Image (tube, rainbow, N blue to C red; front, side, top):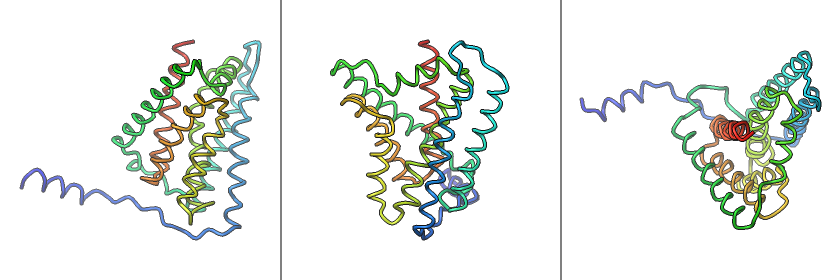
Length: 236
């Protein structure tokens, strides 16, 4: 038996991933999207509980933040499962090759954005400056969780909800809205910042269009935000 035959036999023995079944969505079920938006906004506001301009942070406030934040993540995940927007988590959805390729595309988009900023004389984006200022008044743990986990809610809101719920019958419309809303949510104020977030949105939306894999998008988005956090603390 040659190597190719062995590989094929091993592949057949691997349990197949369940594909996400397409369910008909009504306007009633589509309105539950508001629930996801509410949870996202609550999770975004929670870090304010722990903020302190004097640099003195109370442990109980950090603990309260963690409990409420985990609750928001869990409720959002259950909502997505209940409406058949994502499959149950399985390690095989986290495909290393595709994650690395997605991260590489994000890195390329960042390089292009850097060139555009250099040519236009732009030093950065206002959104990044805002994040840097927020990082100065939050406990480091809270800031890291807030920044790196943003991808969970953003992928649910801007990719999964639009493709599988709101515009599930119109994938091209979903792609346009997914790209545009994610870009707009990062508040671009000039051409350079528009290209920065527009290219990032293009990569993430393209990944979802091609694979329809929430866990793949989540992994790429998380790693990119984590990379940003490492860069932030190194520069700091």
